[in-house]
Length: 313
Image 1: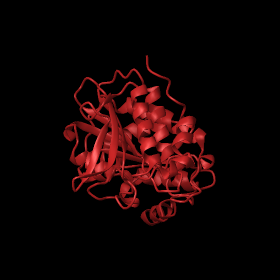
Image 2: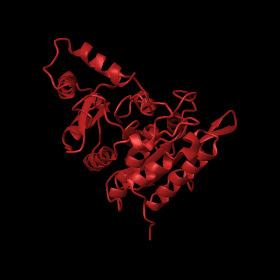
Image 3: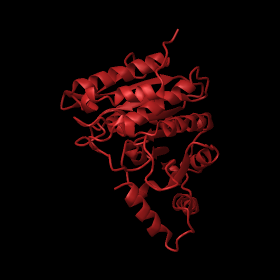
Image 4: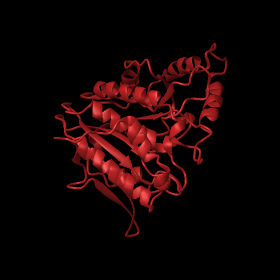
């Protein structure tokens, strides 16, 4: 019998505990977090993804510099969906929003999806080495994963990447916003996002180019794989010692997890095609209108760019 999986609150509180000292690579807290995430995969009845191991060593010039952690629930169709977030951070910074919140949301999502009987294989991966100086290098955890993937990436139908998903958006009346980027590359992803409603979060779609590859979706975009990048954007506690558990919106995090469950079910059994959405500007315009609460601006692209600059400094 599987052990009980901690609540989203307990998981996030543990992973952002100041005693872990930021989960920085090479530190004791990083090792504790890594083992905790491995335990969560076991408790959720995942199978190790890397042969008989939960860990994928990231090797730089013959030296192990980090480890990705991942498990798989087998499906029936020979294709896969990937849910992922990074777990590393900086020494001395609790990293509650970056990225304990996203890790907790994914674990909570999979707790609700237990006894998986889907068509797709479902993969839950916790990437290492996302933060500088590893960001967008060959040893960034997600890049290394794609370059040394135990799966055939041709069968990956979507990578859903979470980062900075625990805070309120700093726009009055839109605190519950969650940004979804990447759907502009696929009508199937637009449909998947639009068809899943939530009372807890307001999901707004924008083009990834509005902010660029700011997280682990980077390698999947470069490889032409369908992806969704989910985030609440920048906030004043980003990469600061003040990024602490008490500043998170736990109700919003729970709402994101519940929305994620429905998105996974929506994507399951679907072959996601890469076919750019040529009228995506209309979708962005509606998202901008909801975000600002006003009439559509005359210069749409410039207005979106300005809002995105404020939210992703």
